[in-house]
Length: 325
Image 1 (cartoon, rainbow, N blue to C red):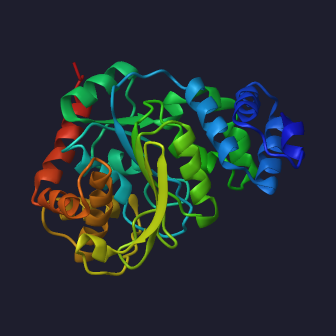
Image 2: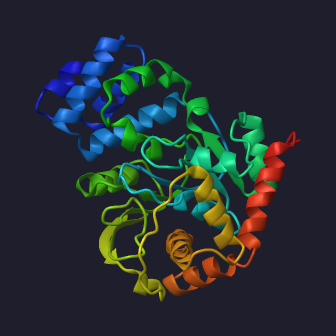
Image 3: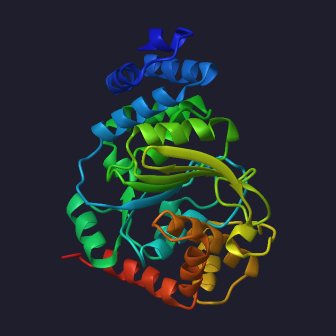
């Protein structure tokens, strides 16, 4: 395992799969060596895909049918509202969403933090996850619960105190194996590699976005997009004007509580215009991946910001808090 990383040669998909699968049984010193050496050497698209497949195969098995996910790598250092979770909630008004996430590492509000503060129960067993999506079109997969094999790796990762490959693998390792994904990447240098890895993992429709510098569609300027549609992949740049939206600045967010309140305000048809545009643009791109053109996607997303999205969030919280029979 470690010998592969210390070599200058990139691993194939199968080699990366085997190396990462064996990582879960290694001692802490070799785990630390592997993660550190990998970070120094860097990793290719085929390696990322092999690592991600190994993580998914080690995860708790779930069969939720066709689902979509909206997720990001984090790490952009920008304190913004949790737009990916807001987008996932809006998206669940139109399609089935299995949101895979965790507590915050670098931002003010990870998806788990946001949902908890919005009254959503995030610790759900597989049966509850299945019934949740059947009742609401939305469910949440709390990453530590669905990746038990990582319990030996995570303390080592934390003690290293550096970003590791796990920062990009989480968004690729949803146990529900979504066929459509909107995935934000904060580091432009690895965005295309992640897009190629997604394609290798067999997604049907996806977009990897980098919003200079955020891991979202940026309402203040350009966003790089790598779009996957079956076997085809193309890259292009979009701006808010593509969706008929005027540019605006990003407004900093200081806490998870503030993030929830600001998102709920937008959902109810109020709130900051900057937050509204931020949520609207990301939701529109997610809906575009569902088969709508840019204009239709923006109009659909906009139609939910009249209280419909807030009712959906309240429904999700209510159902998650019950016994979900």
